[in-house]
Image (cartoon, rainbow, N blue to C red; front, side):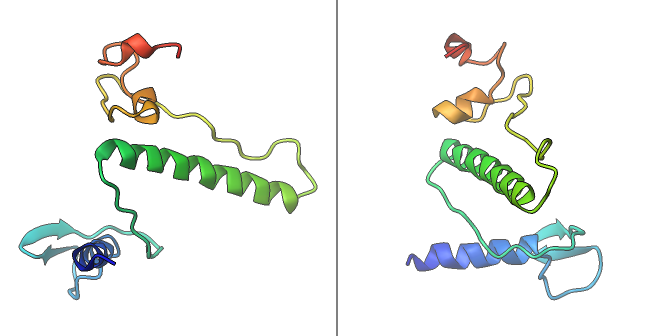
Length: 121
């Protein structure tokens, strides 16, 4: 285990879970002013990767896996199996750039992006 990475993960979880030890809508975290987010869940995992492209790849895989799992869970617990939730597509924004790995390239700008030569691949 890499101690600095573990400490960073803990600090990130504190930030995202609003665990600043202070009341109010804003707080300071190591000298940075951070606005508290309002949500009703607690995150307890952090995934660290070695590059931005890889983080995009992993995020895409995690999103697909989430919806696949949710769809299979709904199908196995429901008598209505004709229209389960299906989310299998990603949107791409103009002038977006997300990296040079194949999955990351697939969500970059399809027209003006530097990867347009890969269109249709």
